[in-house]
Length: 85
Image (cartoon, rainbow, N blue to C red; front, side, top):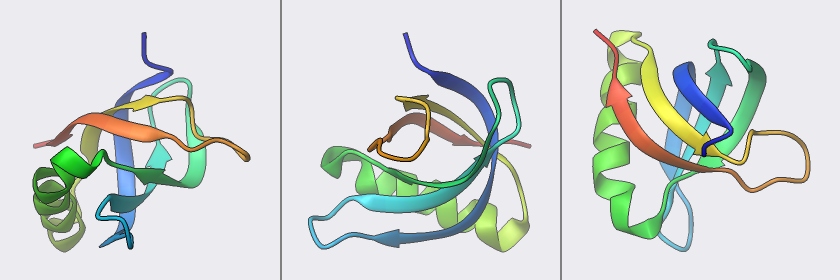
């Protein structure tokens, strides 16, 4: 089971040297978390970046599943990443 499953604010997005999307997210749903960097899997970079840049440009929230919960010392991975209407 995922450690976070809910809506997030997104502040910025980019691509790492190894081809993963890198997102700065803040969790709004319990268990909420402050601004943290989260990676995608290499296979989902294109789709995650499309949603991320759309969300940033339109000031929308995103829905995502993140494992493990973002906190210092973890390398969280995002899945089920979608734009919230």
